[in-house]
Length: 372
Image 1 (spheres, rainbow, N blue to C red):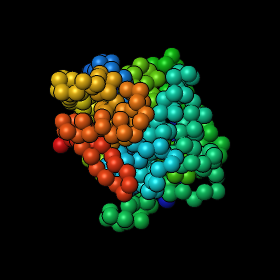
Image 2 (image 1 turned 30 degrees about the vertical axis):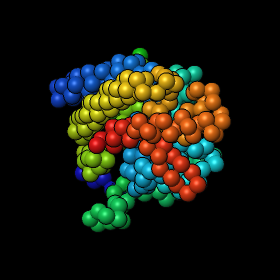
Image 3 (image 1 turned 45 degrees about the vertical axis):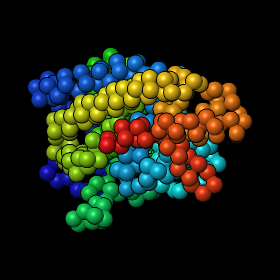
């Protein structure tokens, strides 16, 4: 596309599927094999977890944090862990931390919805966006002059690099085509991983919402992999790879638009899937190994310690006494304080005071999550 105009709405965005033969490209196929194997290993490993939903406050939380960082929204692990250890709505949460928690809630609400509907629909995509942005709006209105600009830290900051399609009917057509491409495997018999790569470009190119498109698109990737049986839980830590390769990510997105360079984009996304799967798999293995080690150690020291208590203290990095109380059936503050002190005495948890509150920290879990 030699005459591509970045300042003009890209209303000529082609419908899916791509006109390039991606399924028989040897470079893509080699990368597809590696990504598929790595993803299958993660999916099998998820079934080893005593409670797969425990990852909502561990791996899924790390994905939420890093995904919002891609949009230049930053919070600290400390703020995030404190927020999830309290009741979400009652906690005094700063705006950046709230953005991360909204991403996590949108991911898991979408996951629950998808368990019932079993397919990606435009309604689901809008629900994800609404939850991320705390709004009831739909696609951006036709008069909205939305453009994509270079970031403030980049060369030529503020320069327009892309103008998404405009027109209400056009966006509806493009989005309907996108979900049809994802769901109809008879009409579009393409490998699901390749579909995810193609659909991620298309969603970002359509840019259907005023804001929050990046986060919505990354959630969509995970939910689509679940819908096709490639992940039993949407916990792939894909944003880590993207933020480490952010410049390449945006360059190769633009290359599809400007030069129809599907090969380099799909290769990038498949590499992201492979490397992310390896990282996620390592995290799961480390968590399981540490859980076993802690359980064996604690049971030899503390009479009341059990498998259920062990799972509770690995469900999130910062623990409140009420979480342990709910597992062991104790509600007395005096009794819970005694029990928590035992966990501290044996260095299973470490106390940290924040004002009048005391948080009990699982430093082993934090070390694993933060890759230390």
